[in-house]
Length: 74
Image (cartoon, rainbow, N blue to C red; front, side):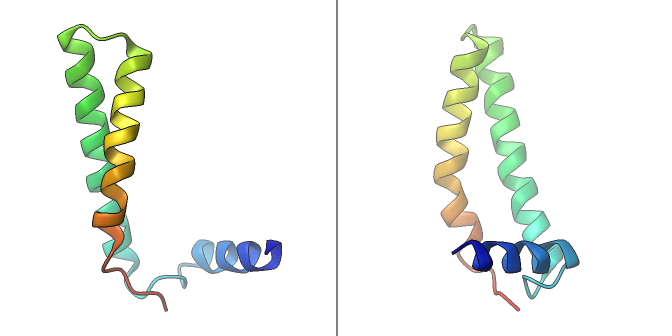
C-alpha cells in the first residue's frame, strides 16, 4: 500500500499521473473557489469562522466526486 502511494505521488509531482494535468488543476480550482466563496459568505452572514470552514469542507468535499469523475489517468 505504501509503495502504491509513493509511486502515485512521484508520478503526480512529475506531472505524469493524469492524462490532462490542466483539467485536474481547473477542477481543483473550481472546488477551491466554491469552498472559499462558502466560507466568505457564511462569515459575512455571521457564522463563526470554524463553523464556516466546516460547512465549506462538507460541501466542497461532496463536490469532489462530481468534479473529478471524468478525469483520466495516464
